[in-house]
Image (cartoon, rainbow, N blue to C red; front, side, top):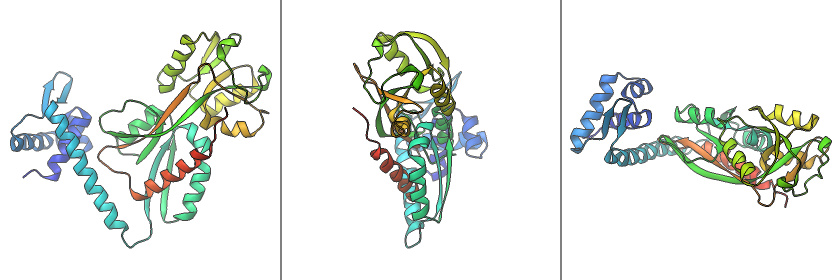
Length: 303
């Protein structure tokens, strides 16, 4: 019979691509993890891993078996959560990660409503960029995170969250009309602030600029959202940001910053929810995420 502990060891080796790292994650010895994996391979009668100079990787059979193991672990966690919540008040702890776009536009009202409705739930929110948040979710230090869309990777469950139109954000000094659609190729060379090359959004913006004849005077790399917004407000530097982070400035009438929807063509960004593949989101996590979705639905984009 294959035990739960053996299944957990197989999952850890697939996700970590190393028996050593899997052992650290599972608080076990390397030989213990190896024995668990060997026992599963013996019970199934097929090899699950290929050993190479870079570590280990699952065979096609191993990858398929991993997916089934994830389903088993998630089902067990769901059953545990349902049993704990049955007949009791909502309690527990939520650990959520948000990129700055979501923390600026949607977090405060969603958090206020949730905290009032579920006072027994402890909430921990971390703001960060996608790479850091993804690592924390994979390590199961976060229950979920909201990040720009990507193809996904082993150890994560990725689901669509929303689609947001990109805007040029400029200060009053540039003289653009607030909320008026803008064709970037018609503009004089821009002094533009871009995220660093490690940021998922950088390549999307760079491709748009290169493909559609946008002229660039200077580029400044910044991975600090509020520093970027302050510099734009006080200078002739501009940046490109999704509507979800621009909406507070739209309501401000363009006094501090002016928002210009990009056209010919428009540019959109996709955002996703990521969770640890083997740990389903607890009931309180689903409720908190739903409050954030409610706020995102309120953010009606300009034409």
